[in-house]
Image (cartoon, rainbow, N blue to C red; front, side):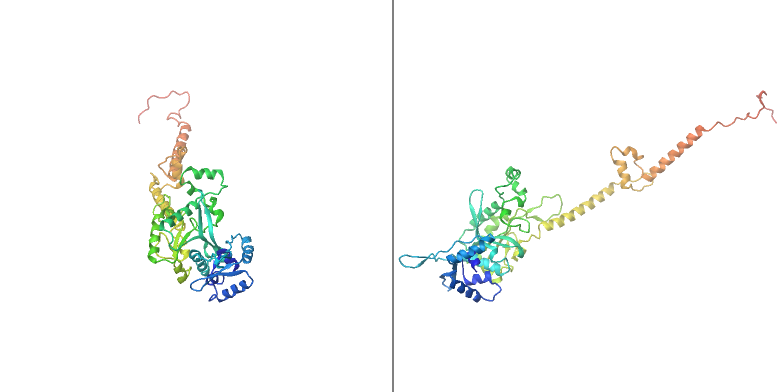
Length: 419
């Protein structure tokens, strides 16, 4: 209870019930705990709203106790609501309750009630300082890795801001996600300055946002959600239409830069996932219901489904693998069509014979390049046999003449007698 009030500064029993004891059927136990903490002078009632709901805040003593609980965990505690009175009338001052702050607390309460994170998973008014010194403050930051949402930045809008102002907020978040940390290495800094889109080629792990937030568990940048409260459906629809169109360059995925054909997957690597919903939907259907719409998509989804990218990296790897297999098959068919045929027997060359007859510098060793290895070996064997026969014939002694049987010293007859 003290920790929740330390984070959100002020809350009603209903909000604290959903933040601290969402499994209970009602907020009676929460109200009993508040009364007990009040007896110990740790909390106090700051005001009672028109609907009789009490707004509770920490006392100075309770603020010190909450600080001991939160700061060791690295969680910033909110500013103490001081109890000040008008010196003339004696009326308690500073009791105005911000409806915007109430909507932020209610949003966190509904998220926690649906199982996203725990009270310490939320922080309010988190500053994001841009390069020009401007500070963009997130109304609410949620970290719920166990629920599939490692980080999400939420903006609460009660339609007090113009739609274009929301577009500017989205632009500032996108700019902050592109920043490098102050101690980035010189090589990375030079690369980032080399051209306007160079930061897109620098891994997210080297950017400033990864020093502040955990990996998203998905492609792209940390998601930003706009939660509308206390407004009409028509106003929400008009605002979302402007945000979707004017903010397209920040949330829209791109086509993959690939030589493969037939790739329909989208590259979400540099996209800011932008979700929209209303506080009334969260309260009516629960934050775990299909109440989140992601810009660029039709219809509403659950939170994790809206954050997932079914047409993203997983689909790309599957399509690229299929395209590569098809390309490999096509290349194989084309290669087979070019495979030489033996001029002697008509058989196709083996891969080894094809290589022997075509590799530059070694083709001369392959014999007759128009023949397969077997026929060429037979040709060589025939040629060698013929050459051997010729050599043997040339080396053989001459055959004896017809008069080799005449007695020596006897004159040879020039003419023979006829018989």
